[in-house]
Length: 488
Image 1 (cartoon, helix red, strand yellow):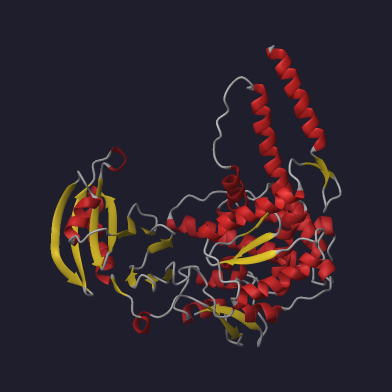
Image 2 (tube, rainbow, N blue to C red; image 1 turned 180 degrees about the horizontal axis):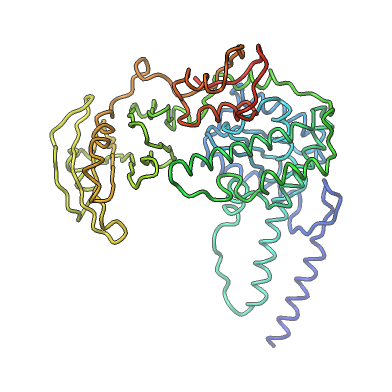
């Protein structure tokens, strides 16, 4: 009886596999898919609804979103699936990323947008993401997962199958974080060139944006090495995309592009569109400005001594003394009831050896408490923490600074300096978050001179970041009078 059930189920699976072969709209090849176009569109709509809840999106009426949409629609109209309604969104954060969901939902992060240097480069990225949609890359990945589950069900026909994580959540994570695999990324590069050419854009823009990605990867690696952190071969939003150098070579070889390739570039249109937008994180997320951290929305700011490397993450503000095991972390805690700063501080370190140094202080109108905490957990057995809590209404800001116990006294002056700098944000006194500004290159300009003029607003590697922002290497310079991007 068992073998009959298994034979019947395998026969059903084979029928499903045969029925699941469909012609790919972009490649015209036969693909294994277990989803109709209608199901694909519904899936994309559901995934887009989830993304809108979890990522900060600029309003669809924002001028930058309208500009991106106008470029995207030109490419969509000449794509291999022009009958779909394509929707283009801008994610309002500093990530270097873009992604596509099934059915024509395209997202590009502001962090990637500001590093583009022509409308053609924007078209290259949007064309790449449209390629994921037209080639149904998400559908193919989704079908593979379904087939795996079906195969598991057949081989375990008499056993219950655990459901595991939501397939929809997995699809979103794949699109946003991991991409659709190396072969799919290369295929989308090729499709992007196809759509760029059809829409009248210069296809060499694909090479330009890929080179910018490579420069940003190199700067990121240098920053991590300079701080003393480990450098992974792949990182960030493009972690599973093919190595950028290989992508550049593959695009050039397969498309047989020449240096005389013609088509629309529209550099000034792109520069005008991004002028004035934040360089890094927005006012809602806080921003690193040189050795300072500003958070206009929370109404706070603080400053770090020279030598500290600052990293703003969605959950915490982190910093590290360059190449030292000396760290800082700022966390926000929403209070549910009225508590003193000392009570909050004690609740943050329950069961620890805590020495209260000040529990009645006030700084910038905010009550604060200060304590030293001796850690005894196995993984931090020799650590000492210099801890502060500042109260601002129903918000508690927890500053924790730590090092090895034997070295603790050496860094107290840095810890004290950071804590003393914590105060309420004032726009007139503390300035704005870093924003893109346009500048006509002068005869005596250099990237290092612009970095110095900005007071190294982007940190130790400001000059390198400005060159990457303008699609150049540090040894390249614009012509006198050329319009370039700076950060103010």
